[in-house]
Length: 69
Image 1: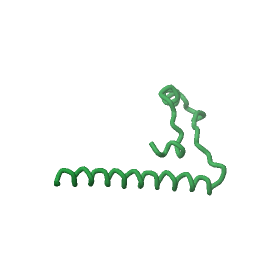
Image 2 (image 1 turned 90 degrees about the horizontal axis):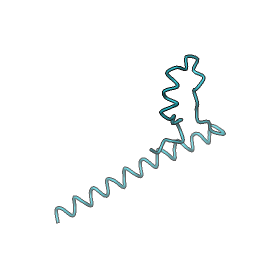
Image 3 (image 1 turned 120 degrees about the vertical axis):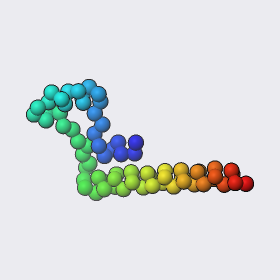
Image 4 (image 1 turned 135 degrees about the vertical axis):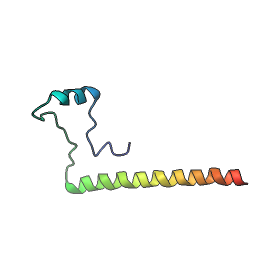
């Protein structure tokens, strides 16, 4: 997924440990060095997804075009 830099991705063991973590001591977050860095990463991820969608649409259009020829 393209948003791995934005969210912490815990493992199965971490998820199971959170069930017993009544004090929320296992919370972890991905921090950026500045708000601008966080915005840059979010915008990059957004535009990457938009680009992937456009490539997929172009590929599907090409496949449909081949079927009609």
